[in-house]
Image (cartoon, rainbow, N blue to C red; front, top):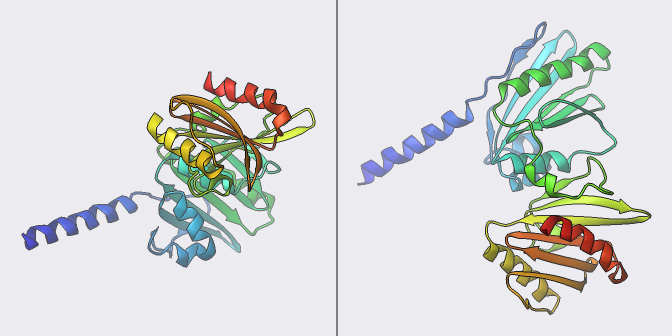
Length: 281
C-alpha cells in the first residue's frame, strides 16, 4: 500500500510539473530570447516579486513564466502569470490598472504606461516592460504582446458579469474584482466593484455572485448580523442600515446575487433602488 501511495504521489508531482512547463515563450525577430528564471509557483513567488506575492496568491496564482528579449543595450522582460480562472486574472489585472493609462486592443483588455504594457486574457495576466526610451523598442512591446495573446488559450473578453453592471454613470475602466475583505469585512468575499457618478453624486456598487441562493443568504445574514439586524424574508430583500466602517449601506439580494451600494445617504434610497433593481430584475 505504501508503495502504491508513493507511486501516486510521484505521478501527481510529475503531472503538476508538466502542467507548469507547458508555456513556450514566442520568438521576437531581431532579439535574442533568454530565460534564466525558474517557473515560479506558490512556493517561491516571493523570490521574484517579494512583497506583492501575497496579493497575487490571494487571486488564485498558479505559476509564472519569465523571459527576456535582448537587442544590443535594450532588454524587454516578459512575465506570464497564470491564475485559477479568468475572474482571478481580471482581479489582479484590475488592481494594478488606472483609468489614466492608454488602453489598447490586445487580449481582453490592455494598457500601456511608462515603458510597460500589461494585459489579461482568459486566466492569464501578462506584463511586458522595458527601461528603453526608444520609440521603436516601445512599439515592439505591442508586437510581443500580440504574439503572446495569439499563443495563449482563453477568451479575449471581459468577465461576463460586468455586463450586468448598469451603464448609466459608470466610470470607464474603473471596474475591479475584490477577492477578500470587501468593504473591510472578512465575511464579504468575491465582489465586482464599479464606481458611479450621477449628477454630482459619486457612489460605489458591489456585485456578488454566489454559488447558490443559500450561499448568498449566508453572506447577507452575516452582514446584517454585524449591524444588529436579521433577515425577514430568506428569498429576497432590501435593507438600508449603518455600517460602522462605511456609513449608510443599501443591501439587496435575489437568488444567488447580492448588490451592495455605499456612498449614498438614506434620503437617496430611490437612486440606490434604481441601480439595484436594474441588476436584480
